[in-house]
Image 1 (cartoon, rainbow, N blue to C red):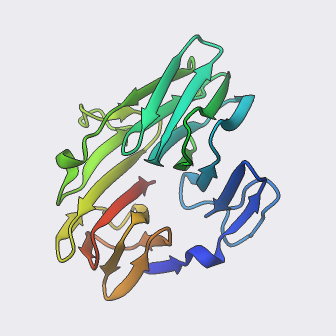
Image 2 (cartoon, rainbow, N blue to C red):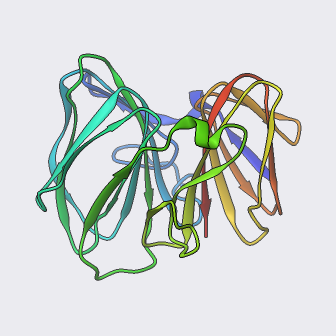
Image 3 (spheres, helix red, strand yellow):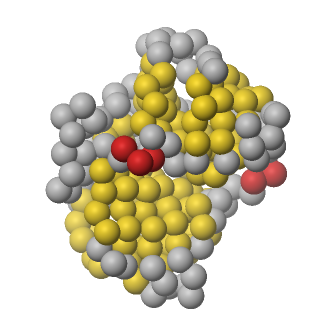
Length: 232
């Protein structure tokens, strides 16, 4: 089953420095039909103006994954972590028992990110942060695990939940498969391009909520960059 959620149907708010679109209920946007997808709670499509960003604010008990689509984001937190994550790369913050952080676009160009929140399976642990470059060549023509709560995904950034975040870059005409499993839920968004799944076209920044399938088979209609959450 695939439920298409066109970009134009997403909730959102434009704050000037931040133009945010919400795949799920968030802040002042509430849609009772879009509150979560399994343990996936938030997928925000954020456009951040140059030299601006999110000032320090707290979180707890949430796995927060940031996928940078364009530009770069600079992270700072009260644990002393600081880092700059560039386009195509990923950072993970496990809020744990509590963390305060800021995310700034310190560049002279617009930054565009996917901000993904997944409910943790494990709670009561210390907060942590990490980032990792994932060169696009490593996921050319196939899905690669970017962040994972499963022990056998050694190369992925660790998250404290029963979920994976995977990415792929496909050239027009290429096909890639991801073994989801019928007891799992997938949420897929093309960052760029356009793809087809089971005859259904999914354009850039559209969401596709997928369930009750063994394998997701994606064919690129255009050169595409894809992000998928495999959720419990």
